[in-house]
Length: 96
Image 1 (cartoon, rainbow, N blue to C red):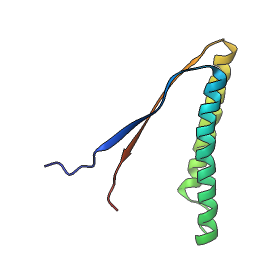
Image 2 (image 1 turned 180 degrees about the vertical axis):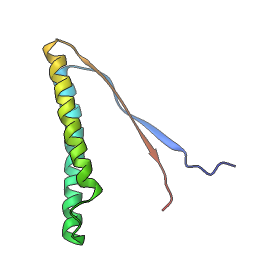
Image 3 (image 1 turned 90 degrees about the vertical axis):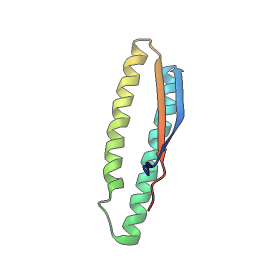
Image 4 (image 1 turned 30 degrees about the vertical axis):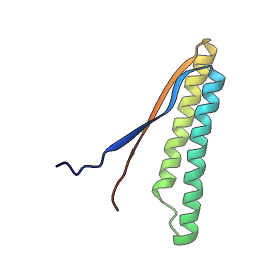
């Protein structure tokens, strides 16, 4: 018998988008993730004095991803292209 948790997959984004719509969808997602980690880091700093949390490092990664996506979208826009975006999230229950 296998006791490994089973992942659940959910299709979050699937379609072909204009560059304006792609920018709106992707930047909204990334900006929300950045805001989440910034708020979490601030909360941890205030509660525990922890100023070097994993969330702070994650914000740096997300800022780079946002810049890379902006460049990709800008190039597609200047070339008159649309963008195909597919995003599946995997959620797995993990015992504490």
